[in-house]
Every structure is written in structure tokens, then in C-alpha cells.
Length: 255
Length: 316
Image (cartoon, rainbow over all chains, first blue to last red; front, top):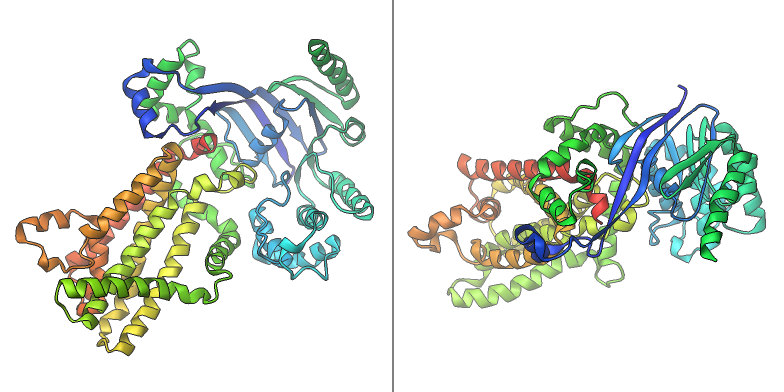
């Protein structure tokens, strides 16, 4: 089945609560004496009227400054944030490679964490049993795999997390600034695997600050600024636009 | 809460807050076009129907969604249990030992106070105490189930019902362990064994259903009112004395009996006492009341979840 993503006029506004959850006293005061204090919330648009659509074969790069809404957009596609207005339509299974290793339980062995993490990615126990050996082999953690992962080095944890995420060819791949941890040898191997994932997935959405990499891997790009898509087109033009219009403007105001 | 502003961009901040308190219903209604989407989750984002799912459909979908992460569910429960007793010398024996020690204290005090035989009073006490500990512990600890999982929920998509349910299940398994070992211990001490203990699983299922509903509700309410968790603890502590745990219901004067009949917890505790201590089959009324209460608590829990699910993540 061909994959497809349609994001139509999606907006998301965060309210930052000085006190995220007001407590009974404040709620009481606000309800019965609304004039006596402010609402205590600062608002900003994390995403504003974002519209784009992708189909099989598209590799979309997203560029933007920190806080432009890139990661929020990916998290919204995964389902973490429900959109507050607009619609998202996704056909195909999304494999997020954002926040790798979330849900690792440090008291459990590497092997158990493979199952736990796989389950959180929506894979069945049976499926994971089939993948277990391949994951262990790719991560090169054979001797350590039955040891609690609290004894792993951070490089080893990174290897395990990457291997679990990258073992299956996804239909839709979401990548957020992933750079494999580990020694030079593993990084090289992981990059090789990432390139494979890029060519095997139907749709890839790639968020990166490595503009050269983005230029070589993507065939479409969007530039985001303050929650809005300010431009879209082919990667070369977009990167030029980003550097000239947005980054330069930022420097101009800074000095 | 936040999209109200989009409809009324001119409203002043204070008015907005006021309006959002009063119009909670209408506001959530606006959400529904998107409800379907987020509900379907990451792997099956449902395109067409932009209609609001009815309540039974919603419940079915929510429970069905758990199927996909049942291994994670299982493993969270096991780890929670394991972590609780980890590195303690006696390990799981504490699930028996801690209620036992507590009971020794209470038995000593109250058997003197009420002038009763310590042995039979001890058994009388544990049939009330263990279920009550299960109910109160799960409710109290479920308050923070969602708020404590904030870091988790902002990184991976996971149904909101997951953590309250993990919490209730963990306590339930703990309860099963302590109840079994207590019964065995009581038999050794010389409690007569009644065949009615075979009906215990039915009572346990009812209690579990009740606890799940309440856990779900309190875990969501705590997201909105963090004070709630402290309030709940105080309320639960006072309930310990309002339920016939340390004294029999028959000790209560006739005119106060209706007050006890209003206490939902009593019905659950009394089931265990009838089955283990009295060795009689509870009447139909004694079964239907807790069943009804459990049902209502599940409805309330799921209803709050349905209304608030989309908003929770923005409140953490």
C-alpha cells in the first residue's frame, strides 16, 4: 500500500503555565474572582497553519532554528500531541526515530529491553522474537546482552537503542537529528544502515542541522520559522533561503 | 483549553479563563474533528470519519489499543513489583509480612479494647484490612500515575490509560499474593476453612474493576489539581475508621446504619468478610451493590478520560 501523509492547516498553541496545574485554591479564585489575578499563562504558537503533503518517494528535510517547531511537528505526526485545529492524515506505519531509547528500564537486561522497547514501538512479542537475534548482532552486544543495562556505557546504550529502532525497514520514517553513538566503527555502520533506511522507506521526514547531509539525502525541503512554514521547495534553494533570510536576519538583530 | 482563544481572539485573558471554565463541554466539542485522528494512534491514523465516537465505541477502542502494547504493560507491572522489593533481604515475603505486622499491632490493641479472643479477632481483622489496603493503596498511588510519567508521555506515544492501569494491576497482584498467604497462615493458626473461599475470585474481580475506575479518575484529576493527591490521602485515612474493618457492622447503632450503607467501600470489604470469616454466601443484594458501584466507577473513569484525553499532554 502506498504511504501518504497529508497535514492540513494544523495549528498547535502551547500555554506555558507559570504553575502548570493551578491547584484548588487558584482555580477557586479564578472561577469566582476572575479579576483578582491574571491567568498566569504565557502562550505561544508551536505550530501555525502548517500544511504539506507527502507521498511515496518523498524525502522531506526540515530546516529551522531551535524552537521553530520541527520536533513538535514530528511528535504530532507520531500522535504525542493531538492537533488543536486542522487535520492530519497518515497512511502507512510510522517508525519514529526520535528520542531513541525512551522507556529503557535500567534494571532490566539488554535482551529484556529489546522486547520492552519494541513493544513501545508497537511491535508484537512474536515479531520481536524474530528480530531479537538481528538486533543483538547489529548492536554487537552479544556478551553483554543478558546484563542489566545500568552497567552499559552510554555508547553501548546508544548502540542498543539505535539497533532496535533501525532494524526494521519502515514505511514512514521520522528522523530527528539522529547521530549514532558509539565508536567510529559503529558510527560508520550506523550511517550505512541509515542510508539503507532512507532508500527503503516510502516516506522519510528528516530534521537536521547538518545542512550538507540534508541536501544530499532529501529531495524536498521546508523551512520553518516560529511555528510556520515560511518556504518550501527543493533542498538547495531552501537551505540558501534559510541561511540568507532567517539565519542572517537573526544575526542582524543580534548585533 | 487553548483553542477557545481561536474562536474569540479578542477576549481578554481573564474572560477567557472564565469562559473556559463554564464552557468545557462546548470547547471539547470543537476538538472532535481531530479526536478520531489522535485516537487511532500512531500506527493507524484514521482518515475519514470525523465524527465523535460514541462512549461504548470509545471504551472499546481504548481497551483495544492496549493490545498493541501488552508486552510493555506486562513488563511495567513486573518491574514495578520487582522494584518494590528489590534489594530487601526478604523480598516478596514483605507482601505478606507488612500487613501481618500491622495486623499484630491492631489485633493487640483492639482485642483488648473490644475484649475479644485475639485469634478469631485477628482473622476477622485481616478479612477487612487486606481488601481495604488494596483499595486505598492503589487509589492513593494512582493519583500521580500520569503526572509522574510526564517525561515518558512527551517522548513516545502511549495511551493515557496505560499508567493508571499499570498501577492498579501492580497493586492487584500484590493483593492476590498477600491474600493467599494470609489465608494459608490463618488455616495454620486454626481458622476453619469454608468452601465459600472459592467465590473469592468473583469478589476480587469486582474490587479490581472498582479500583481501575477510581484510579483512572483520580490520576486525571490530579493532572488538573495537583492538590488532589494530598486530599485523597486524608480522605482515605479517615475512611479507615468509617468502614467496619476493626469493628463489626453490627456494633453500629441502628440509627447510624444508613450512613454506613452510603459508604461505597464498605460493600467491597464486607464481601471478603462474608466469604472468609463468616463462611456464608453473600446475598444477591450484597453482590449487586459492589457490582453496580464498580460499574459506575468504570463509567466515570472512562468518561473523564474521553473528555480530557486530548488535553492532558498540554497540562503536564
